Image (cartoon, rainbow, N blue to C red; front, side):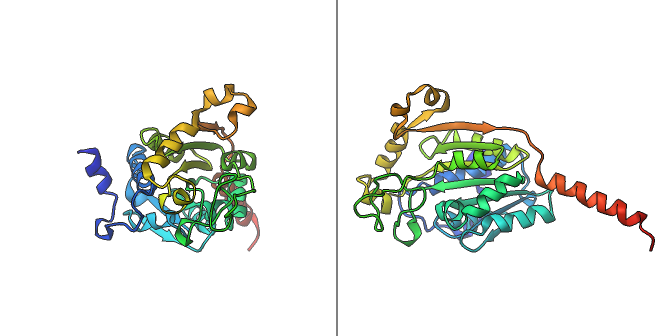
Length: 279
């Protein structure tokens, strides 16, 4: 079977054409996610995909899995509930800046702290594209947006460093320019037994690009190419040279007890105690 045909088998073709703007990178991420599911050998009946609100969250409407399109910032609690109820399922979250770093930020750090077996793919387009391009916690320093017309003075989260500090056991970063690297990073995140985070830098020429002299999709892809550095090379750079650059590839991987596994042990203990108690 041709690879593209395999991807189509995981799509709700009747929902096309999609609503993303011309030049948006979200389609590249969606295809990469589907290729990762195929590479990981996941049956569509064993996968649940969850989103919150935003341009990225429209992705769940196009995929042929059981899906949830939830409230803004609440994708991770919904996903946690699914995983706790049916630990055998593969649960993925496709989410953007707000769902992960703003209104959903508290849920994000606690999901990482628990090391629950979820795979989070973060669509980082540096702004709130669905509602007009406002700045977000991931907007670049000095970038222009409707809410920061004179430049953003807030340093953005390094969401990968935040995930590692909070306890995530698989953390990776890529871009839509690196479309050949991305499916492998996502597939390995799906295979990893623990909380997996894959940040993907993606283009929004309609808003972020327009305000920051990156109006064409090709310019946004060139920006990703010119500002990304392989992790090993990045680690060799001086602190001054790292300014304005970001590392791509596998950032962090570790083994630690997974939350639903530990919870199942509690259930077993309670069952043993209940059987011993006199009725």
